[in-house]
Length: 103
Image (tube, rainbow, N blue to C red; front, side, top):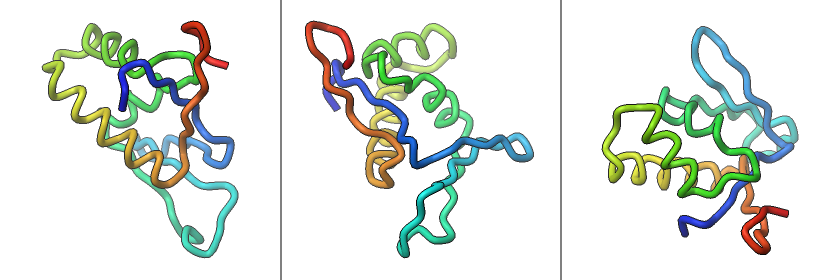
């Protein structure tokens, strides 16, 4: 993912906290995801909370790096994996960016 990419959460998913876990639940289901829910680990839940349609991948990684004691390369790999997974289930989509601001 390019560091300047910006992603927004899909309206087709809701987030719920259940027994201390962050769970993503699709609200518009098709046959392939009829009984699907997605559980995010602690790092995934923290990264998910930063995806807001305005912050770039780089700015999220920098902010997470300041907040948590984690090596930058490990954080980058974890975030790339999460973004790939979230894109594959259509829980997020890339936002067009013009002149440095998301639209």
